[in-house]
Length: 295
Image (spheres, one colour):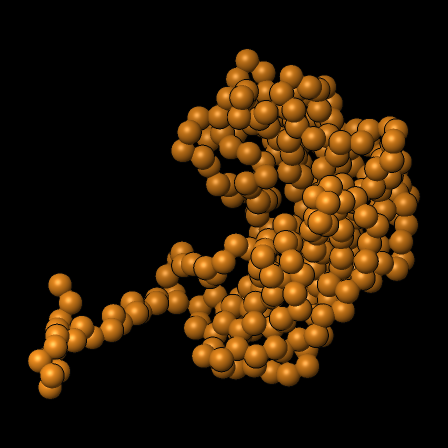
């Protein structure tokens, strides 16, 4: 029960509840109380910093992982951002949101330029200015690697894929196909992976596209409910397939071998280790995955 104190008027006064101390070195702590559209991390000699954009307002915040420092670095309002992908050493992002008709998808590249230095956590101030570049409407998918991005556009009977920088310049088309429903992964500067969107009982395909020449290689095909994650040198792919049940494998391109992996999860919930090519980190659901999980 809370402690009480008596005032001179005889009334009982309840002291204010003191906030619980935050352990900034704990393995898991909450960084935002608001919904977030996307976050990115960057490492420096001072530690790891997270930047994120609020879904409702589009305001951008910066948090040091193991310190109490948390600042709002931009208060430019971009309402209803539903997706944000960070790149360019966490200084740029691709923000996507629905227009008022709830059908048109607008895509903007936002770059941050520092104007002041903020060290206070009690009264956050605006530290950065945002410079925005509009990209074509109704882009179906975007992925980022460093200061480069790949995006897909659709027309009535085909899809087209382009690479550019965050300013929208150095634009180059590297993909054109009748296949429209695709998800992209910008694997490295030389490679973009394109996977058909997974659907139950529908054969899926994985292609690797050379960003310099536009050459396309089919890596996997005719796999129901296919979803994938390719490693950083584009030599192996973790993938999930649907059959009588759901199974996950690693396909090695050089040896042409398939290695079954457990526990079962979604490749989108995994990350290839950058230090050890034989290690994959995954988030695993408590419930067992089956064919219905892929629908």
